[in-house]
Length: 199
Image (cartoon, rainbow, N blue to C red; front, side, top):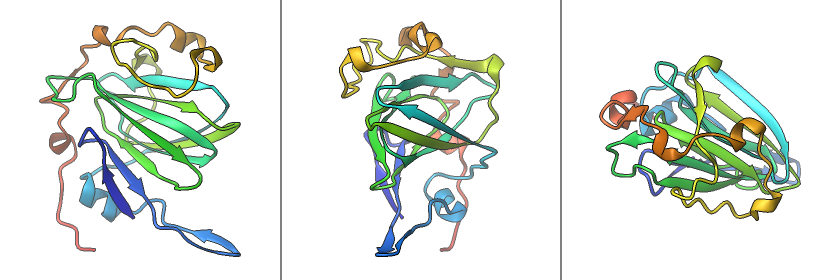
């Protein structure tokens, strides 16, 4: 497994090592001790899966305290553009985002900590998307920001006229209205303490 830094240090890309031949392939998609060595102590409690067709955009979503969520996301089939936006007031990367293409070829995973909004856009004919969460889905604390907010300057890679969003996501508030997260409370090293791991 290779760990790749993104333009925001708290957001990491995990790229597994694939072992394949004419029979198929094998790879480790998750290993707790390796993950904790690079992120810190995280306990995943829920895993979700969705299927979407070309042009569907889901996001940008997050959960408000005290039910904030971190996510480890990946694509089981197809290809998506995955995006994480830093919502933490006072962060050196406040308002900036990470974009990463996730697909079935490279099988990369993206780690999105608490304090970030998350969304993805399907680039292939269809895609099956899966993600682990370290907190349960809580509808009363479900929130989001507008996917095409000009202040975020996200390059979604597809023309706006082919992008399809839900009615809820079409009317999410602007990024500037969100004051839910303070950087000092949602720093990576504070949320995910590290312990010594021997591999």
